[in-house]
Length: 257
Image: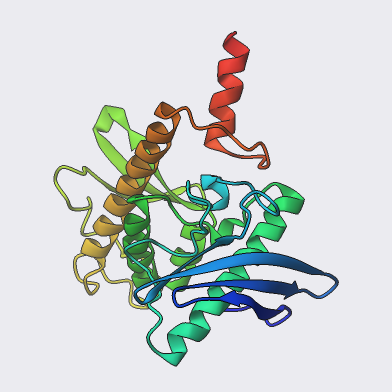
């Protein structure tokens, strides 16, 4: 949803059948920024980028969600695409672009992408969608904690298990190869149960918890694969972010020289 303290204005500069150039102004509470953007229609999907990549933002930066071709990653590709076919999706698309540019402005100023607006890369994005859906089933607080990094996985090698940790406290555990959580007689971890039912009794929350754990594990594995693949291609960091796996890898390499 668009932060109502921000407004946008978009004026068409040039337009053809499948492509348009626009002057986009993002107006915030105390300042405004202007961007020259190119929109390319591909069926009912729209790809957007700077007219000249690298002017306002890096030419490409996974941490800032700018693809290798300079296009903006404004949603989960293949999982959360906004197809421009009806009025409500058009409005949602412009709001998503506006929020994306807000996040870019914040990243330029602070060197940090807003944590609550973070989304995974490549195939990891689909796992993030699943993880967020499972977290929400357990309660809105679980979803908030997941987005802010307060709901994480801890691997316990001695027990060959993984633990679901919320705000530093272990709340569930399982062996991934078995596919179900341990201690089904324990109280459910959800926020909606007021009777303190057991995990086995409380709706489908035992299975939901297991799916959440597996999705978070898979998301981390696929995210690591994405980073490794780009590093293998000799990807160069843009050095605009304080926390970036590519910058970290580069610094480690320099330290070893």
